[in-house]
Length: 54
Picture 1 (cartoon, rainbow, N blue to C red):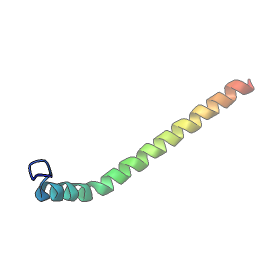
Picture 2 (cartoon, rainbow, N blue to C red; picture 1 turned 180 degrees about the vertical axis):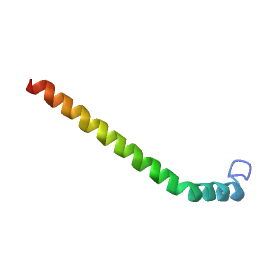
Picture 3 (cartoon, helix red, strand yellow; picture 1 turned 90 degrees about the horizontal axis):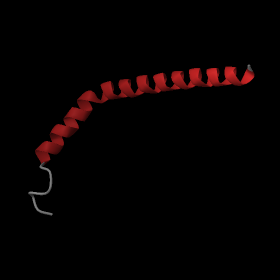
């Protein structure tokens, strides 16, 4: 593979630093998304159960 087609080491290092710097924020965002999704699922199941019981 030629050097033109492969990313430079500097670019890879900058990407790695960016990911490491923002890993806490990404984890927090993923956790918040999982909490919202599970809450929405529970509410949806509750309404589905209520509709079938009535």
